[in-house]
Image 1 (cartoon, rainbow over the protein chains, first blue to last red):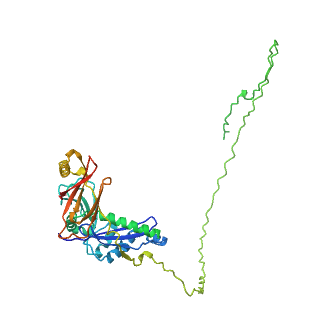
Image 2 (image 1 turned 60 degrees about the vertical axis):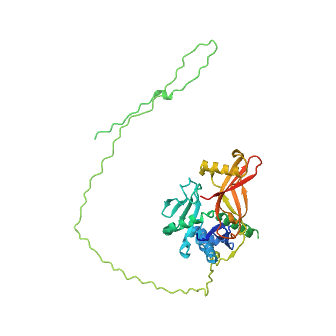
Image 3 (image 1 turned 180 degrees about the vertical axis):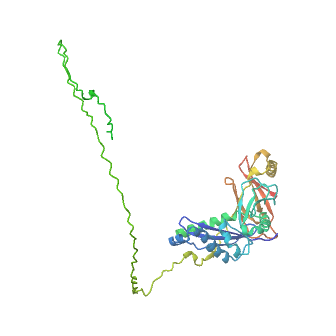
Length: 182
Length: 213
């Protein structure tokens, strides 16, 4: 079995309009290998007006995620992203970007079974008697879905592949709270 | 021309009636009081229309109409004068720097290193009953109690057994916290399922290891 490294990236937007990005790289057991976070970025009123609706996407992907992925020392084999706004960065990095989530539905017959939802999304059964995992890649990278599926099936036998997201979010919230207090 | 017939109007005589009140003395005679009628006021008059205006003949002359050419003089072009505007020698511009476009610094943090890995338990409605029954039986045999003495809490997976430093189960939230070591002593860790149950006699939490499927 290959020793895959899985990356998780997310952004926390606090009530005080502070954005903090964080990236976690774990081994195939979910043990942290590297966690980096950005400075707290607070867009000014002028920036909010100039960027409008694109501010959120710009801050998340082009600014925070880009800085994090460049600075990561341990590059992941697979990057798990929370939403589609990060897909704009896929061309700049050699690893696939993927959205993961648990599907509230009946389990499929056996591990390895999958159901195609669309050309770039599938529901994959990793462990028996569990809900399948939703795997979605960028539409442009739909041909990579087969290799991503194989990788996730292997990783899913040694760790809960969705769980580290909660750790990243919890850590970012704690950092943002600390930044707000100081 | 005969005179037009003028329509007449009928005027009701009763229009001008006036009423009078008569007083009746006790035991007095009632007398008729003559009420004068007012003569109707209307008349008939003959209206003679005014005579029609006499027709007039217009004679058209045979004189030729002469067309005269009236020359317009060329308009005088207005002269354009250059007006000197005093320009400001230097215009000050303000460059708006987008703060978020600057280089974002990132820093390494060890705050996640010590965080436990949290696993959610299996939804037991997706686990077939014979399998649940088998797990309860295993838990009962391991703890030398009867089948009915064990209450199943939940099943968790995948758990790398060799990496476990400590576990903590939250039966109410249905979560298992795993404190994992960074590396196994030798070889690759074996991943298993762990089932947790509670003994009905003393509320003790018991567990058993099951193969991953």
